[in-house]
Image (cartoon, rainbow, N blue to C red; front, side, top):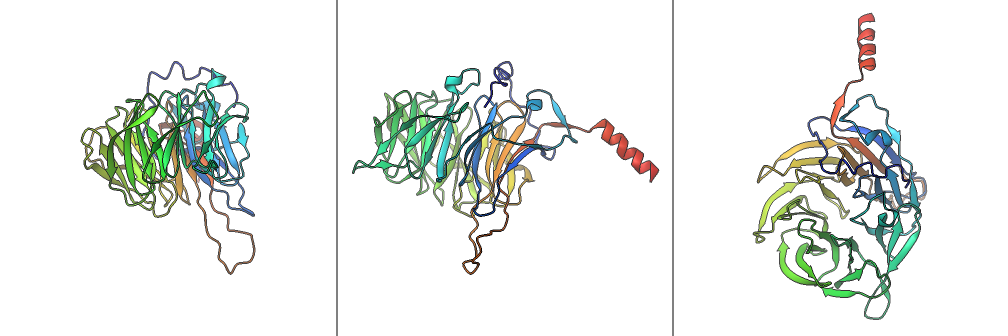
Length: 393
C-alpha cells in the first residue's frame, strides 16, 4: 500500500457515501486468480476503515491488499463507458494455509503508518498482525490450550477502540492486549466453538459472540474481561457473520446453511425483530455488510446475487434491489465507507469427480470486483457515435 491516499478522505468523512441502489451496478475493476492445478477461491473482502484499500483472502494464495483506483477518490458520478480496470495487489502475504478470519485495525489511517495493519488467523498457527504498507509480520498473539499447545483461533476481531484483540476458540474467547503480543491473555468460557465475533461502535463495550451451534451471546467488556448480558437463539446453522447497527440497538446475523438473516432488537432481545431471505445452502461463510450511515444492508449469496435492503425506515423491509453480479457464489460484500463503491468476492470449493483422474479442474469464477453504486452518466461522445451509426444505417 502506498501513501498516495494520505489524508484524501479526511475532509469527506463528515458526510456519508451517496449510494444509489436504483441503477444497475457498474463494474469498475476486477482481479482473478488462476485455477489450473488447485482451486483458488476468495474468502470475503473488507474495506479498510479509512477507505483507501481493500483486503481479501484467497484460499491457497494468501492475503492481498488492493488500492482504490485514484479516479474514484472524488466526483459525484462516473461514465457508463468507463473501462474495467485490473486490480493488482499493492501488498501480498503468501500464506499457503487456510485463513479462518481477518480484521482491520479500527483506527487505521493511511496518514499514520503505525495504524495500518490487520489481524489474521489460520489453521496452523497463532494470530498474526500484518503491516499493510510492507506486508511484514509485526507480531503474533499465541493462544494455548490445556496441554500447552498453540491453538488456532476460528475468529478474530479488534475491540471498538483497538486496545484489545478478541480471539474465538473451541471453548473460550481469549482477550489479548493489542500492545502486548505474546501469550498473556484473559479467558471468557463459552459452551460451544466461537465462529464469529462482532463489536459495536456505538456501544464500545458490547461484543457479540457467535457459535457453531447457532447461538449468539452478547457480553459487556469491562476491565479487560467479559460480563454476560443475554443469549440469542434462532438460527439453524453456525453463525458466520454479524453486524451492529449505527445506533447499536440492532444486530444483524447470518449463518451457514441458513437462508435467513435475522435482525435482533437488542432493547427487546427475546425474539427476532424481523427476518430477511437470502440464498445460503452451503457451509461457506457468506458475509453481510451495513453502510456507515446505517441505511443499507447488503448480503451475498451462494447463487451469485447481491441483495440490498433499506433498513433505516421500515420495521419489516423487503428486498430493495437484487443484482446478479457473479456466476459463482458471492461470499463477500463490503460497502466503501465514504464513496458509493461496493466490493464483492466470489468463489467456493467445487468437489471433483472421483472417477476423474486428471488434476485439471474446470475454471470457476474466483473474482474480486469493485462496483459503482452511485450516480451514472452517459458518455456524450459515445452517445453521439451511437446516434450517428443509427442514422447512417
